[in-house]
Amino acid sequence: MAETARLSVNGVDLDLPIITGSEGEKAIDVASLRAKTGAVTLDPAFMNTASTSSAITFLDGEKGILRYRGIPIEELGEHSTFIETAYLLIYGHLPNPTEKQKFEFALTRHSMIHEDMKRFFDGFPMTAHPMAILSAMVTSLSSFYPYALDAKADEYRDITIIRLIAKLATLAAFSYKKSIGHPFMYPRNNLDYCANFMHMMFAVPAEDYVADPVAVKALNLLLILHADHEQNCSTSTVRIVGSAQTNLFASISAGICALWGPLHGGANQEVVEMLTDIKVKGLTAKQFIDQVKDKKSGVKLMGFGHRVYKNFDPRAKIIKKACDDLLIKLGIKDPMLDMAKELEEAALSDPYFIERKLYPNVDFYSGIIYRALGIPTQMFTVMFALGRLPGWIAHWKEMMEDASTKIGRPRQVYTGPTLNHYVPLDKRA
Image 1 (cartoon, one colour):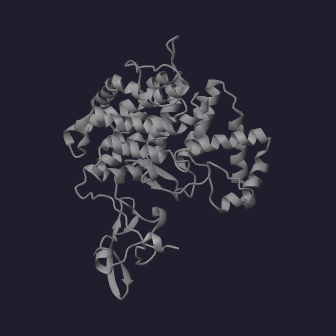
Image 2: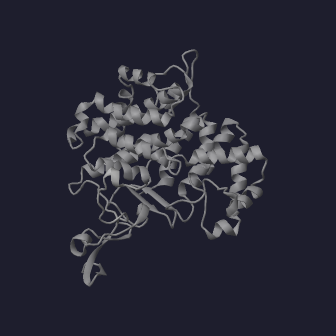
Image 3: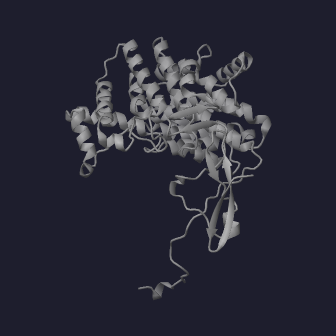
């Protein structure tokens, strides 16, 4: 017998189906609630609302579990590559050797952008934030590939996905070059995805550049860890925009704009700014922690706590070790890493943080790695977008291929004035 939940509204008893996910999570299906009772649910910020069912990513915040298509993030971080992980997320399985070679070859061959697009960069001022440029340029891709405007056209879906993944790295690097006034560096077909991105970011025409393999490996890991994270703000944005059968380029551009917010993709930048501020003020970790605990101070500990995780963020454990390894291998002594470790130790031994289950999240150490790779602070969110792209695409694709998809249209509870009437201008006080 199917499991149900009984709800009584104004004398109407309703048996609502309970949906059970593959990992045992429960959801009460309220789709018929308004039709049968006239009532809707109110759940600000969707704290307890599942907007969809999905087979892409499983996240258990209480146990600190993150899996892509069932594979633990720890295993992917240790053994996989970003491109292989992207294939996994988008197509539902790890590629076999032939699929992997074909996918990588296609990404390499589609990494260049149309020469006319280079002129678009001329219209942006030097002060333009790279995220502003990136979101605009991704939208503009739809004008170069008009057949991709039909989001339901299956025959163009794979090539559109290939083009977007391949060209986003180029657009991201060009956005950075624009911001510092450097000439654009074209992609190289003899380099893999991460090495090619670093070449476009840091090479200049005046001299040869070879990306450090250690740095390439660290970048590869960071992108894997950011590749998907269930129904977060930007992914939900991609889904709700895409639910209108909006093309992939425009849907992803909307996700980039959502990610730009400091409460979402900008968090690792705020961690670096916090650590810089601590250093400038000459504070110890304990002194700063004491300020954080003082509600009147207005000081916040960035990079701790998470909307979903009530345990350690599994990505944070991986990234902390990677941060240590990278700086040692590159011979970099970053005082910010020392301060970050001192802050973590001080916070995790303090009852104030323990009781509130505030643990380091992925943003706490990722900014330090980006700094070590030579990536400036204003590019941190762009890097997040580059990593999150496969997840966005996977969710958009999953939704487009689901015949039951309807356009997103949340309800509201109106709290404004009741019936009112227009008053002519000469009679208004």
